[in-house]
Length: 348
Image (cartoon, rainbow, N blue to C red; front, side, top):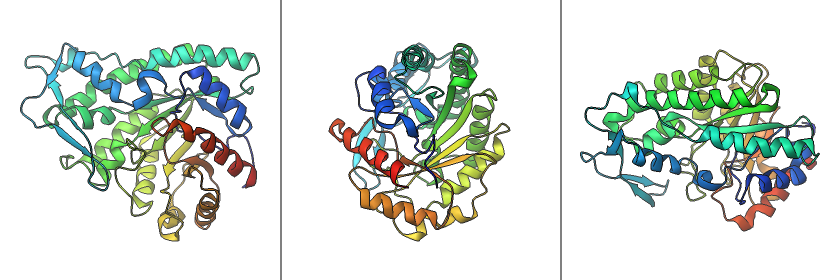
């Protein structure tokens, strides 16, 4: 592997106070190795989709579902993260008439104005794209919506996401934009985390991710970030190996008619063994797609080298990344994360 623009990829969230601080910090520390820069998902987005729960609670068409118990959101080790009262459509509401304002377009356009100003001034390298990270309907659906209402909710929320995407691509030139779909609850569904997943969950997931990808205009960069969650800076499920991730990457590629520019998958910190990476040997890579392996971990340069060496035995072309976004990590770890990424990009 040679050092080149795009050698590193950042998932999206960064523990800083503003998008301008994120842009300046990332461009200064890692700019030569990034082909796209996210805005850090600051403010209300710092807890990923949690602010969408408040949007649903405030929506006149939605209410707490009194027929289901609170959802227990647990870690891989059984530790309870939180209990969540889930919502449903109010009786008598026609979901076809419901419109959600997700806020993702508003946030993207505000950050784009800052990004464009800084890039014009030279603070961000010329040619760098602005990366917008968007959740799927299943992200909020599995967490915040009760089972009986969920499939209908997916349809309504997908409509809202596509409306937000339309507003984004109308305002930002296609050659300046990258869209990343964040795929987390889908990975957890494949792992059996949600006990009420439907029998047709695989087809449902691939069809949905294909539609979302196909909604991105051809000249906009398109990527998918696969994730095992990190609400407490730990996975919700500890994967046996990369087999499910490979199955999902292939299913997404089959369902997506347009070009996929990049895919990201996580690698747990302790996986320096061949078994984790072995499924990548037979992976059918989409033509032209860049693979980013999330194997860079905080303050673990030796481990980073070992994980890279193990991965190279099974896949010979990949970029480098962390497992997930950094927004929920301790802010004091940010300098170490930046240094680790810079060292890795310069060393291999």
